[in-house]
Image 1 (cartoon, helix red, strand yellow):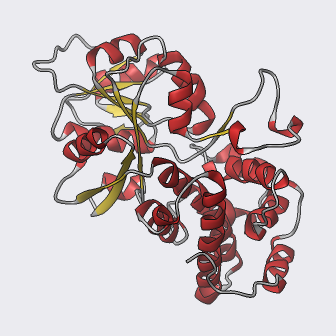
Image 2 (cartoon, rainbow, N blue to C red):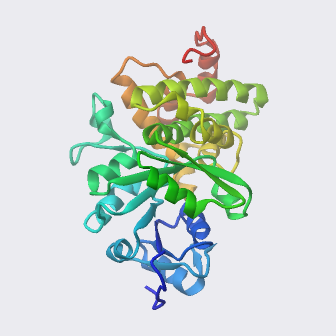
Image 3 (cartoon, one colour):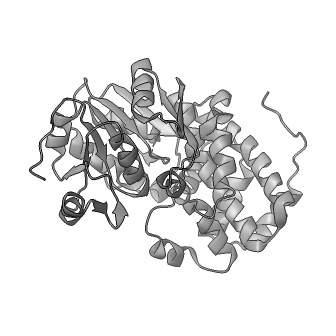
Length: 352
């Protein structure tokens, strides 16, 4: 780590320096001193010496470390900005050093599985809710952290990095987590709302990624705005039913993390999930697309997990089910679309 020292106790920690982690670190650095964690020694050196992270500009006051203990001992508030595929491992790495007094806010829109060691999703016959973990549940399972929150909403990193106006929601059962997140991040161009339904907010952010992939596929096929409107509205209904089944509320699905993020990612070429669907519709294969992407499209793993959950329940989610077949069973996108157009939806809205 750099030899620079810190003059006060306002040091804020950020774990992960992907696109979103870098943006959040830079936003936090406008008001506070920031210490970021990166597991790669070369990235740590790049941040401390060049004020960039994998080529992305970082605030000159930000310092990086490769030491979880140093970050936990230096920071009372820590933002976890780690992909869901690595989240459990990172939580376990930080577990010996996280304490109940820490305030932890994550920004990961994904799910983890609580499976016996060595078992994969493909080997699970009944994937019930107890085996599916949101990121806040991972933190509570793997660490002694109590005051846990999540950050979600229409927050495309590329736009935030340009200072374009946006908003987010901090969700937590603990009001002090919401208030601290608002204090640290709110600015003239970034509004921060609060929500006590953390599971509902997490699930909304997770489930909209499924619909974003499908929206990208529609765009790739050139099927127009009417079709996109149909998908978003039916996708919203599907999100609500799935969120309810997994323990979330209808209210959160209508907030920033739900419909706000859904509309954004279903219309943005800067969305990784939208891009996956778009490229699939153009004839590319999923393995090739994933190999060429710099960062994770969380919706791919989410589709697999939700498909497993559907098989263990009596729920139907036609968009998710058909998208699974497109992604993993070589169903043609056009055939999936025809199935959805013929699906016997009888009621427009059936959850209010």
